[in-house]
Image 1 (cartoon, rainbow, N blue to C red):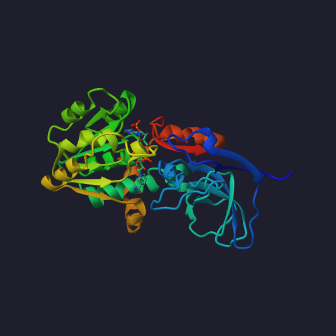
Image 2: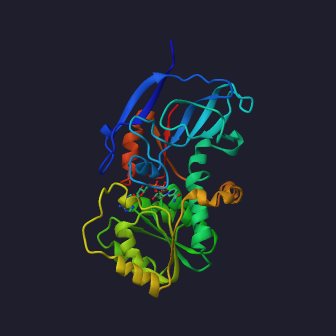
Image 3: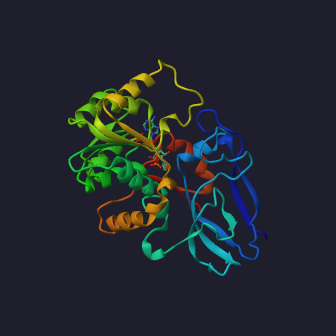
Length: 338
Ligand SMILES: NC(=O)c1ccc[n+]([C@@H]2O[C@H](COP(=O)([O-])OP(=O)(O)OC[C@H]3O[C@@H](n4cnc5c(N)ncnc54)[C@H](OP(=O)(O)O)[C@@H]3O)[C@@H](O)[C@H]2O)c1
């Protein structure tokens, strides 16, 4: 009997929060590798906020997923058949197989993983794209100095949690912003952040000010919206703001109502001589070896850690993905596919 390949495709473009009807689970035949190709079986699928942007047709830094196409995504996959001499059956690789059980690849862009390096799903989180984003954005743009205050939101996620931990290793004070008391307790009690503030609390702006008595020197921007509104008045002269993500707005299809506050922002940029710099992780691809050396070393030495939120089963990816955009995940969201 032919082996079935389950694939989750984009069924419709969402306006607002993604819902089940925006995805479709299809079943087809498992693909067969041609000469020069490998057949990959997905073990782990990474779910990341950027995927919301790919569901939209709006112009961005990467091309959208087309209706009917498999949702994009990085995977840890196993080579289950090889017609390519560079790969053998049983090899574990990082791949862009997307939301499906099986994919074929000509080997281009695959990165072989060494099982001796620990649980392979780490390469989707702390030792992968999100970890690299935190490392490069913080050190190249944020440039924290000892004694400075570094604030970061979405602080229990794979990007934010590493930003705070690396900030502390550099001698800075780390203030995490997260949704709810449980996430805040994890930041201070498990990850060693100096303070944590719940952005869902009614007194969030005042609590953030209390947690940053000397102001903020580096704000690593992951969320935007109301969190940025509370951060802006606290930024010190010459503060640096690596603009990494704006997840609070990913489900918005138009600008939120209210007065145009860009003059307020630009006045702060001018008078406080702020540096705001957007970046995409691959801008810093040249730092990949430094990242793996440093963060890999800190991880082995127990100086940093990464938490995973594991969802079982490819069919549960759409619900888990939509939940992540409103904070239902607690740690790096990965799907155990097989
Ligand atoms: N520039 C790049 O190359 C690049 C690469 C990777 C990631 N990113 C960006 O980095 C950010 C973090 O990514 P991640 O993978 O580490 O995700 P994540 O933290 O695991 O998940 C997103 C988190 O955002 C928080 N959030 C959602 N809505 C919010 C709101 N309205 N206000 C405040 N927080 C809200 C939630 O945490 P709480 O429950 O704590 O609120 C949620 O868990 C995202 O913006 C992502 O797009 C950028």
